[in-house]
Length: 152
Image 1 (tube, rainbow, N blue to C red):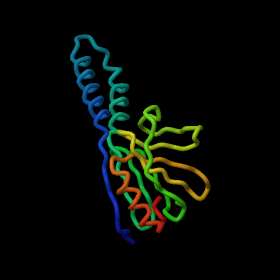
Image 2: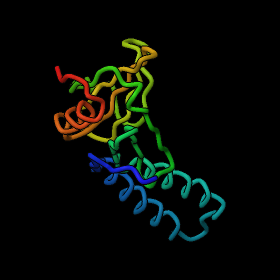
Image 3: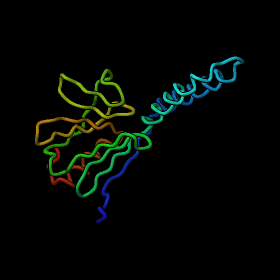
Image 4: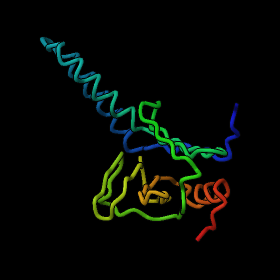
């Protein structure tokens, strides 16, 4: 059974993409040097692979799930809408960083690729997650509509 997607947005991590391009140029320059040991090629490819995996964040809301996917899909997470008890737009501190972050105080997991805006969701089990987005109001509204939550 196909589910209808009510919200879909891709946020590009321009800084991460810029770093990826710069690292590619650096690695290309290193590999062109005479006498370079090609055994480092595997490490270089692994670094490029990891950077590419965090180059964007796709967020989707359908009738059953809030889904997030980093880059080309190596990392995918889904949250059943029936388990979400609240959603609200928030602003992350600069030191929260980008990528996947576990914070112990306040206790939460952050998924982000760029900027400081996010939507914080709280689950029935008490866990808190923040999903980075450059459209916090739209994402909050989509989650609220899909879960029939009141916006605050």
